[in-house]
Amino acid sequence: MSIQDIATSNSQKKAILKAINDEGVALQEENGEVIINVEAYLLKYPNLSESPVMQLITDESIDMDADYWVFS
Image (cartoon, rainbow, N blue to C red; front, side):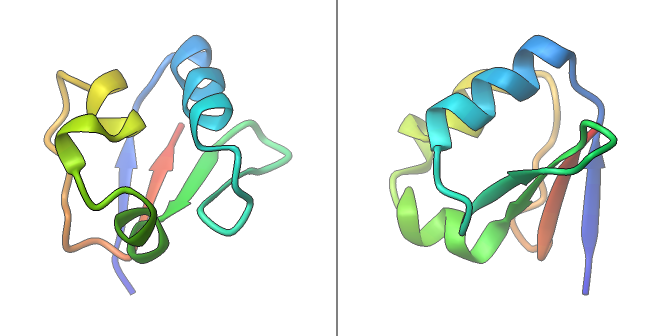
């Protein structure tokens, strides 16, 4: 299992959760981290250029081969 940790602001994490709004794809841990299941995300958003993460996280290299993205 591979995990990519991505540093983000609180407002970015809130925007990601609001845009995705599917607990099967993204969830927020008690410590505030947002975890995204990459496989489920890619099924929900096959057009990556229009997906919420790609629109909100522009300065980070997103690893599409990771199993999970953790926004901290």
